Image (cartoon, rainbow, N blue to C red; front, side, top):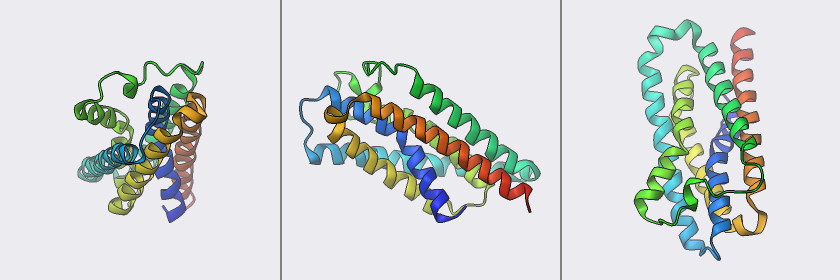
Length: 191
């Protein structure tokens, strides 16, 4: 994978956290920049760690599935992309009440669990990245940085742009994941 593919992947991986942050921003009367940045950093750190853990699992299993690795990457990206597209279509009425960050609890523990729940897909991508022979530290850093940026922006803009744009970003993220999976499969099959 080249730099641009990793950048697209990082942006796609951050869209679900962005959608949650936008919805949280809607529920707040105002969001201080420092508070939004702290939450963005928390989400970014979690989103950096989970693909590293997934990569470790993928690296360990690589010897068992090496001849089918490109198909596994394609299947993981396709599944995650379809899942993100599906999630972007449900509750598209603009109601964000069921998103994790909209609960009245504002504790650190709640934020950590929310960050983990939005980064489960990054774990699966980490498995796929091990099979695609990608520099995982660079990719995980890009994913974490993109998530930090997107969550911070999502919180700050939430009450201005509304939940609908967050769902559209998740839809776009799903399409990008499918595209990355197709490109990976194409590159392996055309060699």
